[in-house]
Image (cartoon, rainbow, N blue to C red; front, top):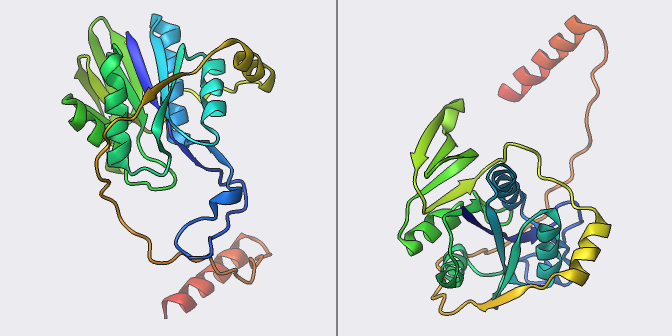
Length: 252
């Protein structure tokens, strides 16, 4: 089983984010990037399948300032091959990214593609759909577990209201992973540095990615700061009465 995991870099929400002078984007001069949370879960699910079935895991990422570090980290976690897609950067739209990844996959033997179900900086959830369409293969999104049984792939998919279903597919298929069955593993800094010395990153050209259809941002604002929290003291009855008073006042 050959598994491919496209990963995306997104702004690190732990850092303080600043809006640029135009007010339409984040100030990217001092922006710190990290692997998208859902992509990290997709990678972990792929590594779980590798541990259980001996699969080969290949990670891909668009070229950018932090791309090398993220790809080396994926190798330190257990991925077998890392590919940097050049000629395009992380600011590409979901459609352009899907086209770039599809072009890169033309020279790769794969059975299963695991992507993050969405990304923190756009949350449109379209990459797995667009990628599957571009590749001409089926797709399932909002996946929380993947199991392999012979030539069958069993997929746990989540629906609204806590409803889940188990679907069955055959290679090739694209899955948009929402959560891995285990918390994404941690790669020690010492291991990442060792991999940087020992491993090499492959590079492929993005090729023709076409025009990117996306929404435009007219203006961004920082959230208004509130006056702080009101602490309610007393026993359970007093707290309940105070809460009821506050809610009734907001309703009227």
